[in-house]
Length: 246
Length: 362
Image (cartoon, rainbow over all chains, first blue to last red; front, side):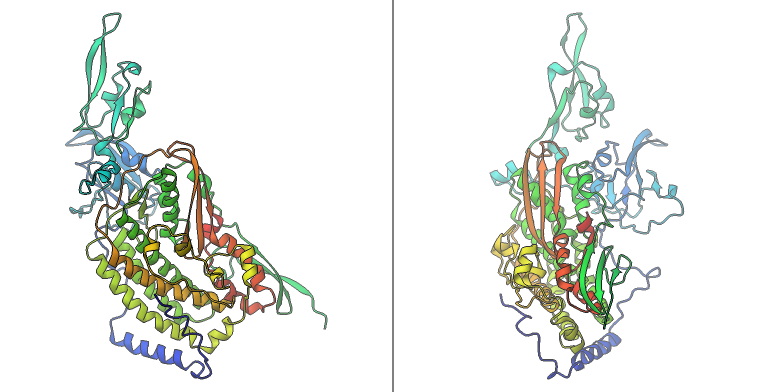
């Protein structure tokens, strides 16, 4: 490629009429902009076009959410908090609440959401009168104009697949990674089954101990599991660990 | 005649300083005899804060290092982590990163050109270059959803593939921009006022620049022929054909000319990368724990050579993340540049450094 500008300039400005050329250029531009439509947008009355994937404040589809807490864990500014909500249709459920005043609009909550309940909305006019106004509860987070295609999909490819030449199988960590049980550490406490947001864990009797009581181990249903790691976090004896598939 | 020397503090509220920094100059009448750059007003503890974040969470924070070079800063961070993980990024993702980097370089240089225009009292240049910059910011909105804090590169690829018709938009913007850049050049380079204020001031020799460790357009304006993109190629820059502009004088005009030429070359790189772009995946899955070790990656930022040094200890959080900011080094040349010039030349000279305090103070 060739140098485009540096071999042409600087020119001798004395031969070019000192500042005549800039005057001509501005005059040319003045005529151009007079004919064409103005660049200025009268902001509150008319707005700039924004694409569908614009990252404004986070939005929530209340019915889709399972309360797994991946968004809470991924949030770099810890502005998401899981709160218990008394819903008319669903009963007592856990749903994310976002402190929009602290949100940095990175879109991680939407990107990592396994059920595509969190979305990014094109809503950017977020000013409020008090700080409490900026804490959006799960119902306020709803965005009625949410359309299909506004979800951000986490489409990663497994390196092992790429090595085999398979390039059309995008996946995500919550589809392939699963908790792994270390049997001898488990104390049959049942906490993982209680905390699982999607009821993927079932306690199964695997034997009897010396006193004749049944030993129960968790069995994970791979089709239901969204890999939220809540069972791994809550396990008192670290009997469950992350099994990463690469 | 006896004259008394006087210290004049320029900044942090002085209109010449783009950002919060101070330049204390010692003047003898109107000639500058000494200068001390003072920085640190914007220290946020960025490096320390990174030690409490997991690896993906640092990417949007790296955007905040510099508002006009957000893409390159998150790029150099993910390159450092990929270096530590020892993974190869899919080829399409590499091309997308190159395109995004060059868009970022153009819009950063346009921001600098606008600031330069206001420093020299030329408000037309300010308005025109900010108008062209809008086109590139619109490309960013289409590509990654936001104008400045892009959050686009990911460890192991990029966030999303190109949106529908992005290639067409890119070509249109680049073609239109090249046409309009000649108008801005006519406004600056053909003006006797501009040339008399820029030529011959803020001179720095090649040897001094090398000793101080200047990088970027400041270094190439002194005749040092080095560019990380060409001489230590990362991503796919070795497959692309572009020129590295080098100017022999080391004055303010040379630094200006190098940046203008870099914009033309960036347009060319975008065209070539778009033409060569292969199909395929854009992101691969990476392990969440980075093996212990010490790795670094460097990149050609719009302002110079950006480097991140990552020390990992085998967990999902970095043990230490050191940022080598180009402006932190370049501003140390401020004293040498302004020495012997007049007081009124200081904005013209310091404008060519292209200050960005977010990355300098971290």
